[in-house]
Amino acid sequence: MTQLQIELPDEVVVEVKRRAESQGLSITRFVTELVAREVSKGWPKGFFEEVVGGWKGEPLERPTPLTLETREEF
Image 1 (tube, rainbow, N blue to C red):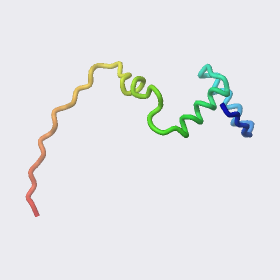
Image 2: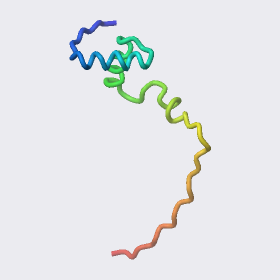
Image 3: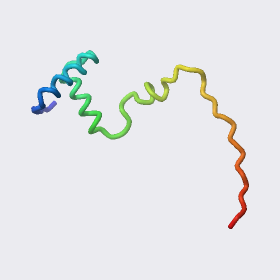
Protein backbone atom coordinates (compact mmCIF):
# COMPACT_ATOMS: atom_id res chain seq x y z
CA MET A 1 0.00 0.00 0.00
CA THR A 2 1.28 3.46 -0.88
CA GLN A 3 1.63 6.10 1.81
CA LEU A 4 0.34 9.59 1.14
CA GLN A 5 1.17 12.64 3.20
CA ILE A 6 -1.30 15.52 3.27
CA GLU A 7 -1.60 18.78 5.15
CA LEU A 8 -4.93 19.78 6.63
CA PRO A 9 -6.06 22.85 8.55
CA ASP A 10 -6.13 22.31 12.32
CA GLU A 11 -9.93 22.60 12.52
CA VAL A 12 -10.32 19.88 9.88
CA VAL A 13 -7.98 17.57 11.81
CA VAL A 14 -10.01 18.09 14.98
CA GLU A 15 -13.20 17.11 13.14
CA VAL A 16 -11.56 14.11 11.47
CA LYS A 17 -10.36 12.86 14.87
CA ARG A 18 -13.81 13.38 16.38
CA ARG A 19 -15.61 11.51 13.60
CA ALA A 20 -13.08 8.67 13.56
CA GLU A 21 -13.43 8.19 17.31
CA SER A 22 -17.22 8.29 17.13
CA GLN A 23 -17.11 5.43 14.61
CA GLY A 24 -14.51 3.48 16.54
CA LEU A 25 -11.94 3.84 13.75
CA SER A 26 -8.35 4.96 13.62
CA ILE A 27 -7.75 8.23 11.81
CA THR A 28 -5.97 6.34 9.03
CA ARG A 29 -8.85 3.93 8.56
CA PHE A 30 -11.44 6.73 8.65
CA VAL A 31 -9.63 8.83 6.03
CA THR A 32 -8.93 5.76 3.87
CA GLU A 33 -12.62 4.82 3.82
CA LEU A 34 -13.63 8.43 3.17
CA VAL A 35 -11.29 8.78 0.19
CA ALA A 36 -12.17 5.33 -1.17
CA ARG A 37 -15.88 6.23 -1.08
CA GLU A 38 -15.26 9.45 -2.97
CA VAL A 39 -13.11 7.96 -5.75
CA SER A 40 -14.73 4.56 -6.19
CA LYS A 41 -17.19 3.75 -8.93
CA GLY A 42 -20.47 1.97 -8.42
CA TRP A 43 -22.39 1.17 -5.28
CA PRO A 44 -20.57 0.99 -1.93
CA LYS A 45 -19.78 -2.53 -0.71
CA GLY A 46 -22.78 -3.97 1.15
CA PHE A 47 -25.13 -1.18 0.00
CA PHE A 48 -27.97 -3.42 -1.10
CA GLU A 49 -27.76 -5.67 1.95
CA GLU A 50 -27.60 -2.78 4.42
CA VAL A 51 -29.84 -0.19 2.81
CA VAL A 52 -32.15 -1.70 0.23
CA GLY A 53 -32.53 -5.07 1.95
CA GLY A 54 -32.53 -3.52 5.39
CA TRP A 55 -36.24 -2.67 5.67
CA LYS A 56 -37.45 -3.75 9.11
CA GLY A 57 -41.05 -2.52 8.97
CA GLU A 58 -44.23 -4.06 7.64
CA PRO A 59 -44.10 -5.40 4.08
CA LEU A 60 -44.50 -2.66 1.49
CA GLU A 61 -47.54 -2.84 -0.74
CA ARG A 62 -47.95 -1.14 -4.07
CA PRO A 63 -51.21 0.85 -4.20
CA THR A 64 -53.75 0.20 -6.93
CA PRO A 65 -52.97 2.49 -9.86
CA LEU A 66 -55.41 5.32 -10.52
CA THR A 67 -57.54 5.31 -13.66
CA LEU A 68 -56.11 7.63 -16.27
CA GLU A 69 -58.45 10.09 -17.91
CA THR A 70 -59.01 9.91 -21.65
CA ARG A 71 -58.26 13.16 -23.43
CA GLU A 72 -59.31 14.36 -26.83
CA GLU A 73 -56.61 14.32 -29.49
CA PHE A 74 -55.48 17.58 -31.09
